[in-house]
Amino acid sequence: MRGLLPANGVYDLRSIESIQGITIHWTASPVASGVAAVGHIAREQLKRVADPNTGEKFRAIAYTLIVDGAGQLYLCHDLKVRTWHSGARVNGISRNVSHVGVCYIGDVEPNEAQLMGLKKAIEWVRDSIALDTAWPLAIEGHRDAPYATACPGPTWPAWKSRL
Image (cartoon, rainbow, N blue to C red; front, side):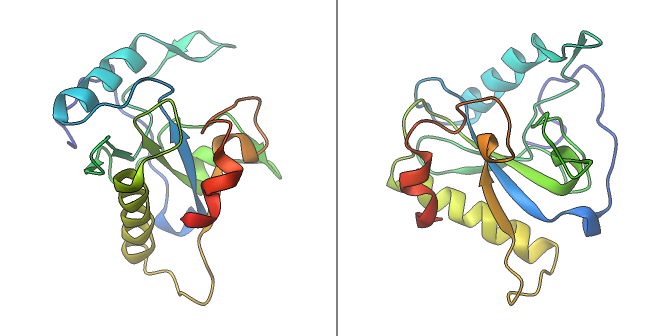
């Protein structure tokens, strides 16, 4: 999907070495599948304000990877692209720099196909940054950073361990 989705601009870049983890998100919308669903998410995000302090809108879809309702994985940005998937800062470091945003389409916990897709996304990120498997990639929900959101849903603690 890289380069095919609507955009209002481009995001800044980050170094691959800065990536320490993955932040899991949900769309909080009904489960949907296919390229059209991903395009719809991108169009809707472009309408939203990303920074309430400046009023700046999202430049492009906020996630590096999206998992649709059928578990299909869509790559929306290269790993070096610092998307705006989280407003959280931990120890002075923006989660947009240190974490990859992975989102599943849905407003309930992910189904089995989506769980498999999320696992594939995590494996792809780990393999792409050649992370030593002895040092696991941190996996968190958007709200875990901490950040004032319910994302990725109220049952996140119950299914987190399945990833």
